Amino acid sequence: MALALELSIMVNNIGLLIIYLRIISDVLIGNGEYTGIITEFVSSGILTKAEFSVGLIAFPVLLPLCALERMDSLAAASTSGLSLAVLFSVVTIVMSVIEISKNGLGDVAWGFNPKSFSGGAGSDLLVVVSVFPVIFTSLVCHYNLLHVKEDLPRHHRNKMPKIVNMAGGGCMCLYILVATFGYILFKDDTQGDVLLNFSCKVLEPLVGSKGCIVVAVGVRVMYAVVLSMTFPLIHYALRETIMNLFFKPEQRTASVRWASTAVNITVAFFTALNVPNIWTPLQITGAVAAGLIGFVIPSMLHLSAPEEEKTLASKVQAGLLFSLGFLVGAITIWQLFTGQLTG
Image (cartoon, rainbow, N blue to C red; front, side, top):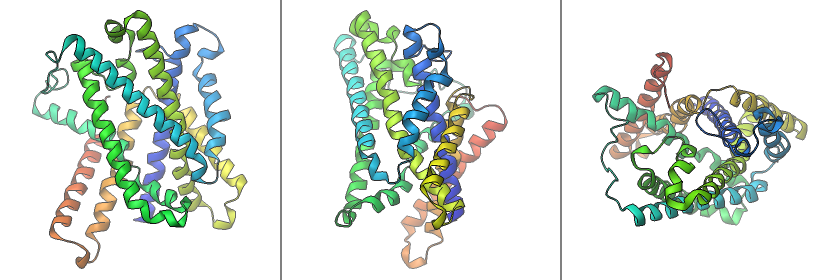
C-alpha cells in the first residue's frame, strides 16, 4: 500500500508539473485558441518560441526554488502565490458585479447547460464524470501535510488540525465564489480554460477597449505567477518521494537533490511543450493518481483497520469514496483508449 501511494504521488505531481508548464506556455505564447502575453505585442523572434520563454522561467527561476532543501524556505513564494490567487478571485467578482449592474441576472440559466448536456443520458453522464478528475486534482494535496508538519516548530504542531480545517474551508469558499461569480459573468459561454473567458471580446462591453486589455493581460500575468510560485511546492513532494524510493538516507546529498530536481524539471519541460493541450494529462492525472491518493487508498486503509476503529457510517463512507475513485478512474481510462477523452 505504501509503495502504491508513493508511486501515485510521483505520477500525480509530475503530471501537475507538466500541466503547470503547459499553462505557463499558453499564457506567454498562446495556442490555437488565443494569443499569449508575448505574442500579443511581439509577432516574431526568439521570445515567441515557447522553448526559450518557458525555459527562462523553468530553469533560471524555478529550478533553484525547487532545489531548496526545506519546505519552509518556500513560504514567501507560497504567500505571494496565494495573494495573487485571491486578487484573481477579486477581479472575477468585481467583473461579475459590473455585469450584474449592467444586465442583471435575467440571462443566467441555473439549469444544465445545453451546450454540454444534449447527447442523451449516457453521454451526459460521461460529461459529469469527466469533471471529477479536475476536482480531484484541485483538492488532493493532503500528502504535503507531513512535510509541512516536519518543518513546523514543535509548539505549533498541535495546531495542525485547526490549520488544515481553515485551509480546506478557505479553499472551498474561494472555489465556490469564483465558480459562482465566474458563471454569472460568462453564463453558458463559460469555458473550461479560464484564459478563453478573460478575453477582450467578452470584457470590452463591461470595461471598454482599453480596460479589457488591462484586465485580460493582468489576469494572464497573475495566472502565470501563481502557477510559478506554487510549482516548487508541487515539486517538493515529488522530489522527496523520489529520494525516499530510490536513495538511502546517506545518499541524499545536496548534489543528488539538485540532480533529481534538474531531471524532474527537464522531463516536465519537454513533455509540456509536446502535449497538444492540458486536458489529457489533467484528466489522466486526476482520475488515476489523484483518485488513488484521495479516495481509493485512504478508503482501503480504513476498511482494513481493526473493527474497533470503524463504525458502520465510516465503513459506508469509505465504500462510497472507494467506488467513486474507482469508477472515475475506470471510465477515464476507457475514454482514453476509445479516443473519447476530450477537454
